[in-house]
Length: 328
Picture 1: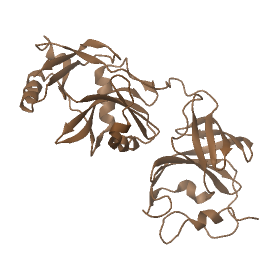
Picture 2 (picture 1 turned 90 degrees about the horizontal axis):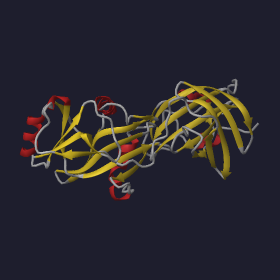
Picture 3 (picture 1 turned 135 degrees about the vertical axis):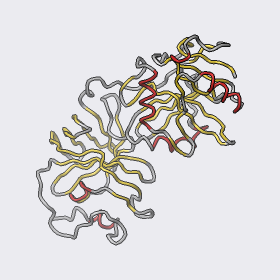
Picture 4 (picture 1 turned 45 degrees about the horizontal axis):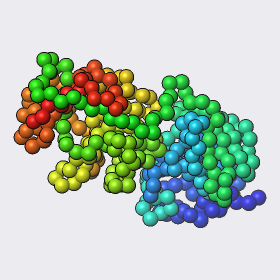
């Protein structure tokens, strides 16, 4: 019988990597019902889907992760079979080695085979994060596509491809109840909505234009979200001469629209994301501190401040009295 792991071994040196490298010989027999999905931060972020079959893990690299609904197919690149021990592997593959980078288990569980051929694989996955029917079909050479066959979980909503930002009205004075607002700096930068999906970034201007290429320095931010799909509202601001993306709202999070949620809920979600990197950060906000924040904006020579009602929804494309701009 052919050695299914010959190619796998040829790519790895057990003295240089912690990955399991079993000796030649018969492989353990199982029930052909184990799957694992590993998040792989290598040269580019991707996810590895592995299905137990005849004593090995048949594997595909999926650059954008599993598609969340039947409306989108994702590329899946067939890679070498992996040993069964790999289903439990997490760790750091040394730089310079094949697949160098961080490997973590994103999900694992059992699966049921509906069809298995050289060109088409239909399975039902039952994991803690992924449950559903998927089909992998071969298109050319090692390139396959993966398609979700059943509808997504109840409540899941596809993020909009484009979203016009909400804007404030301009006032000379603070509202009568400044404590009902959270106060943020008006940065005076370029308004931009960051669409993150499958570890990839699409950056859109306030008019909906794709400005990703002009600001490709921001692309690494998308990888920090892993498989989480989000839309961020923010500004590109020159800080100490370097452009930085400052996020101050989140209209959509991982299949859930937050447009009708109050500002306080959206800010809590944003805080939970812990957006902090060399060129991206979360904008600070101070509930009720209109006078102090406006004074600080003047001292820092910022154009002004924005007060956002704590109970305000996010109204795409609208100039709303829920948000008030006060010049410095």
